[in-house]
Length: 438
Image 1 (cartoon, rainbow, N blue to C red):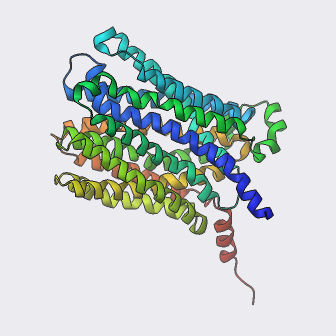
Image 2 (image 1 turned 90 degrees about the horizontal axis):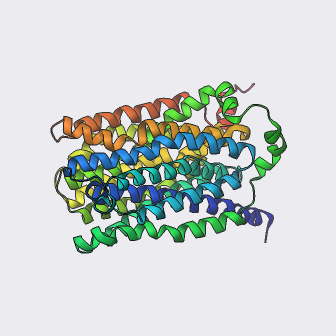
Image 3 (image 1 turned 120 degrees about the horizontal axis):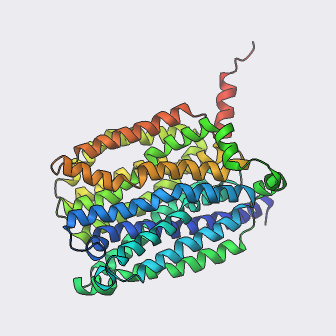
């Protein structure tokens, strides 16, 4: 085996460990969003109307995002001080075990208000662990090698779509059960199946070595007097704010997937299984698109791909809602797939952009903080805010479309103000700008 082939093979160990953890994290989160639409709104919040129950369920969905910044800061500091591996072992256990516990939770009819209270508590634990899970996955994949970083870091990002397909597909399968069976036990099985993924992810991560880039700074990191978060805020504030701004557009999947699922079922009358399968199909295409966008960014740079994806979403959001409101299943699928491929241009390239933007000493803290603060402020509340905007607009989604324009615009502007982080593309631009002597 050649030296290059051996290095590439070695690189797949941390990348696969990162991707597996990402699948577990987002399987749990997408599972919760599907259950919020189909189960939690009726089983955990007492005798309320379907719309009010859905809004309460989305509020508990948002709670997970509210605590994610705290988890990101705490675990990000630990990851920059003691290493990436021990933190990722802890977070995958927190995510998986809390999800399994949700599957075992009695409903409102059985234990009254303890049901929503315990659901919220488990959601908090889930969110705390998730606050560092994806950021850590990006760090590990990004630090596994500098060549083709866009491609390799996009693989954990594609794991988000794999998780969405698994969560939505499994939920759609059990939704085919008679309604009584689904409400009694069917919805619980997808949550309990998380035990398989947790076991596999933990086993892979135990075998994963610490990243080489962290080992190079390990002594310095352990002896540093300032916490990585304080150093990040004092020395890298502009980078942190730009990274957070880029994630505004990266959060739009919660409009085109989570909210669109609820809107198509509750407002437009699409059958639940049809809408769920639409999310599965878009996830299949989106996972491939994520890796393709990441590979493209290795050639043309991170900024052009992010900006292009954001501008396309601005242009497409009104046609998106027009298509799904026509009542055609085929047009619903086309709209969801096209929007999802476009938002993957932001999300798929984000990983390499983040990994290159922050130095190793504060990289874990920088990525976790930038992602999770915007996740709490934007991503988590988006389905709830979008549902409220539809109510305010008398059932129309035009205010939601306007919100998408604003968020995608922030993402495009932040990427435009950022430096090009791809070192090869940046070097070519510098050499091209230097006048040649004659």
